[in-house]
Amino acid sequence: MQSAAKDVKSYLEEVPAERRVALEKLREQCLAVLKGFEESMQYGNPCYSRNGVVEVGFASQKHFIGLYILRTDVMKTHKDLLKIKGVSLGKGCIRYSKPEKIDFKVVEKMLKATVKSAGEVC
Image (tube, rainbow, N blue to C red):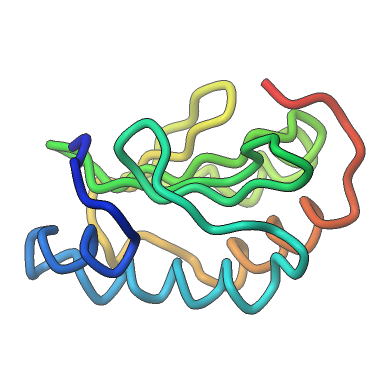
């Protein structure tokens, strides 16, 4: 869902209640791990940018929670850890069919890898 919210806190207040805890945890992880990144609302969703380039984002979509890891090397390296039922992958998108499908340990690994990455952004 693209939002007109001005900030991430407002965005989280308007997401469905059954997804809010998972999205709040994703935000907490992003803020804790992505040091030096700027949190903003872009494309109607929470995003995390470094040097003006969006590298990470998340969203509550109609049928899934999307986590956007836009460094292609990070997605390739962690792809095998994401092969579970209820999770589908795009070029830079991880789609979780239900909040409980999110493996926050894997998310943390991917965020840490993003911080270290200088690879291509898709």
